[in-house]
Image 1 (cartoon, rainbow over the protein chains, first blue to last red):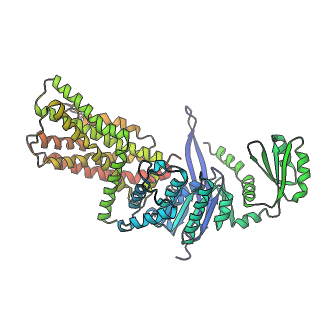
Image 2: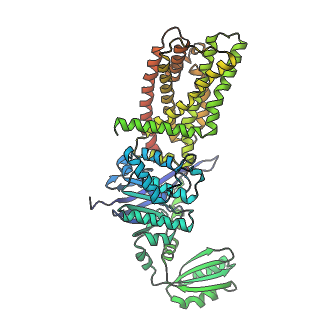
Image 3: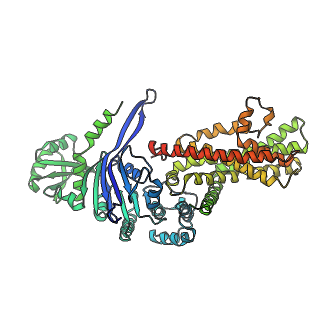
Length: 339
Length: 262
């Protein structure tokens, strides 16, 4: 069994059929996942990174047997997710981010006792197991309170405890830190790390690059339903290691000015982040900091604040990957699928 | 899963569901207040029609109680699944390692058991406000009749609930299925007064025999053994039909992604 991957996905495809329009309803086929393949080794912490709608949750839902793949195969601990559903479910735990998935009107302890029963935890084990998990997620002393009074962080920690009740070998976490405050998110990362230290395999999706960088052994970047890069955080950073990132703080930059930068032959990629009063342009270039003056002149009359030149981070690598893959393709695929 | 574990699971889910219903204002109104309103209307209707004999009042009280039980069952099954889909727990239940049909049995049993308060309430209401005499022709058979009625209602509720798993808006069916079953199963008026072409439908509905079993034990002229046997037989048929439906429904739900709202 040592050679068996904990998770193995081969050419996974998932399409959804839906409709557009109210009076003249037209069928629409949306390809959420388009041929995803990867392997996760036992004991590995694997990150799935991608923007909203990239196919992360759909991929996870196929792996945890909630959705049938349209084509392709996937195995968890050697069991096929389409056919061997019970065997897979006995070996996996999953945690979805957000407020949903708990019984609000009863206590956290009642939630855990209920799910312990559904997950087949031996009655003699339940009390000890629940106490240990409450301790692990830091809810000891709060377990008798109704869940509707829990903060978002407490709910998320209760989700994790629920997902671990039957001591699963593989744990899927879909954006578990979404909506958590920085302290809660840091505690969550510590919990995730302790699970991997205890020998669990974890597949984690997240929006936060630093989280993926700090936690994951390997990261797959998914965009428009396809894996566009796979490797360690360092591997991904190496893809743009020769580049320099110039961060330019602007005030009221116009689309035309951004387009002028984008069209420049020495600019490899550009991303913009809106702040309250300003916009930050992240310009990637192979020309090093020498390009800064040229960029400023291309901005014309735009008011410019702070300008910083720095080494690329994983976030830059991610933004570069997302900017250079998928979007046009996805639009074309979506348009072509209207039957 | 061993038989002992299965029974424990069903008991636990039943108990949990009763607790969940106890904290729902809608269900408290449905199960605690609605049967009393039905019974009051029934008592006045029968009184104005001249039917004031003790047996008639008891007939009305039991029927009104069962109407409340059916309402709680249908909303407890359909409404609960719609609510679970809304709060995101339906995926967790369907995807648990335990068999989902056992979980559904526990949920429907919980709704029916919760609803059976309605029968006790309408009896007490009849005694206190309308001077209805409490008596049972076959008091020893009555508990068996009640059990048969619980099983019959739960099995029909479970069969209907399987479709609620599949369709996001299936809980709208709850409303459609409430009144027709009251009528067809003889809870409101005797089956014998229904048009002859409706009666075969009544005979196929386990609640018809559940009602028959309870009324037979309370005010009948002979022991309702046939009704009790038919309750259990139909319950087995419903359960097997529900299991077969669930296999199809769960496969379709995985194919069509209908278990969650996201």
